[in-house]
Image (tube, rainbow, N blue to C red):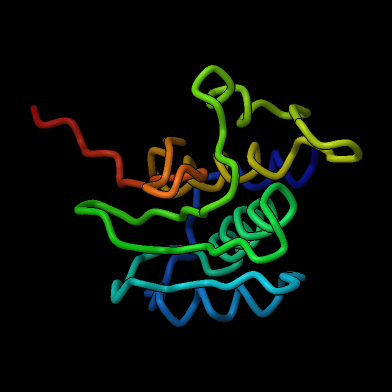
Length: 151
């Protein structure tokens, strides 16, 4: 719970991150069996490396735990952000908002905090996060900078 609370605090120590190479670094920290990652992105973002690392690692870990051992995780660009998707079983439409609730888990032994932390990290960076379906039917998480209101 403390980690969840800390991750939601506004980010102040941001630096440029080459997302493509950073994805590879994060992937190396996750037990992936025979899964693969494709960093289809040549984008630099302004972010807190520690928190974005946790965000990516949580999504990668979820893909491996909820998909098959040979799941493929892909990270790619969006006009105002990036996405992380996999070719696993996906998340049913009626459960997509629930997955961000602290303590919600569909897996036995899961804590239910991984995706809640992902959302808090996104919010701390002033990003919106949406869960949808990847082209392969897996889970897709889209991150986009919240636009400032024009007065």
